Length: 137
Image 1 (cartoon, rainbow, N blue to C red):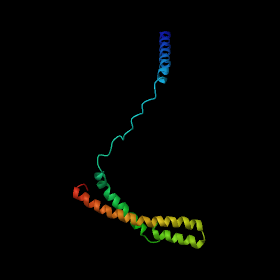
Image 2 (cartoon, rainbow, N blue to C red):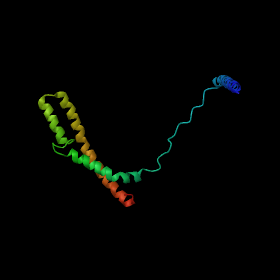
Image 3 (tube, rainbow, N blue to C red):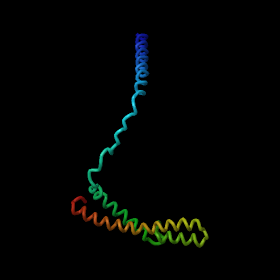
């Protein structure tokens, strides 16, 4: 019975290969393919995400207040503006111009973070009021 199955499998494989070879020229003869329809997003947002924002509000407020506290810290606080100012001054007195330039650029960016974070903190207070009024918080 084994030779019969082997023969049947061989005939099936030959028939399949012949069908594929016969279909290949037919595919090549077709005109330019029609352009595919543009893909759309799987699902568009159904709202503005207010529920999620209200849910994450306490963590966001904590994160921003922690960052502001860190930036306003004294020289002993890692990540503070004062500490980076001290490092810039140390690099300048040591004559390390490249390090001074690098640290000074970081200091400029870090100083610009403070007003941005304070603005976000004010915005979050308004969002917190809105969430409380909606009963979402």
